[in-house]
Image 1: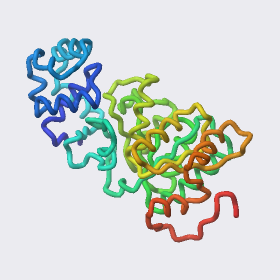
Image 2: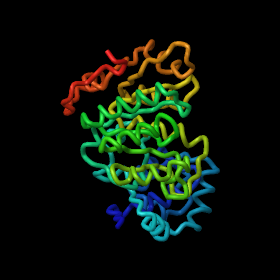
Image 3: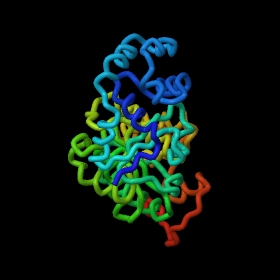
Length: 309
């Protein structure tokens, strides 16, 4: 059963359904009106002092008439989706630290306290056998050391990281650039994986249910992947890659950036190798990450260098 503890949650969801309202606008609404309930019932003239552009004001004026906050919450309940607002105690602490954190998160599954010890693993959709092997090996060791694995459910490196975390009986969180209702999960080939993740972690998104995979949503999603994590590990990525957007977000958020080196003639190595040149921590085993983050290693078996040394 789904519970919405915060009575303001339905107004967060309702405003999130209006085009043009993002984290910055949510902050303006909360500052000016003190509560989103007050904002929802306010006269449209009261919004003019917030510095919103004309299209957004028009969307607020017209869309509020069409949105029933209670009915929209019933839609979430039918999908077994919870809603966490930035005012709630269980909102992820690390994520709250970033610039323009999401005002709300749709969650299927649950967060746990240990998820504060988490690492994002990202990389190309077009991985090689090398990338597949390295992702599986290092994810297994990180999970057994007690870390939660964060990624974006994309094909390739993301998928291997999620699948390996589950296989190692660890926790993993998938951050989507779509809605997290069944019909919106993207890529569709990972819908079963998404359902498995909800049993040992969570699916999350700042986008309302029904949101389709629009290109502009994924760079926005990437800031949450890094924002939830102590650091980001990049495994195989060409220079023009969403994974590199995630690492840029990580640097802006004062997160650690780690990279697996690759063959200098492989296009998939250009991203991580260039990051290493710029100061990213070169990683050849899970211990490199754990020591850099000053985390205890609860994984007791002898760990071998990923490259067999």
